[in-house]
Length: 193
Image 1 (cartoon, one colour):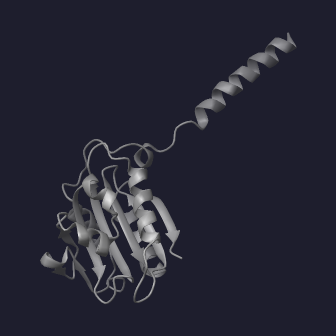
Image 2 (tube, rainbow, N blue to C red; image 1 turned 60 degrees about the horizontal axis):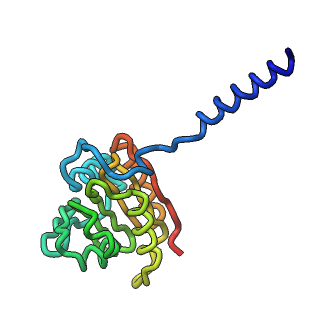
Image 3 (cartoon, rainbow, N blue to C red; image 1 turned 180 degrees about the horizontal axis):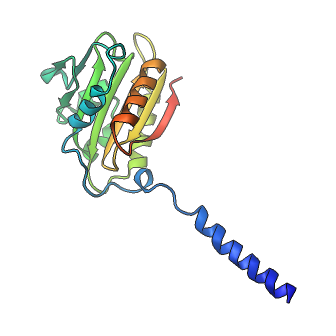
């Protein structure tokens, strides 16, 4: 009788434990699908900037060079592929995976802070996208000072935010993003060496 009870208990533990560790968070590992509360990338960055305290804000411009907006995030024309790579650090192999983009860049030095939000096309693997951006940014040759930190954030399974710059500014940006955007999750946070 004791042997049967032990076997039964062991079987129950195996089934219980197999249910505990199996599935990871779907939003950061699955392919992009479904709807978002946002209609464009600019809304994502604008919501983040709204929660900045006055002493946390910095002089910035948004958008691509041709359509730059001062002191606010701006819509980025994704047909400006060279600028996507050069300014935002988006690798060429990811150009076709985005539908929309917006940016906010430190006015004095892009290496102090550069942030972008991208709406990914349906079916794009968010982790592959994040890994590709990370590899591209970490491989850059920096002029005028090297940024300290890179962060990549999943907004809602449809949008991805990338930012690099001075560690203190990235930390404030991360905290403001996580408080402003419901369900936002850090995919990657890495030093730039």
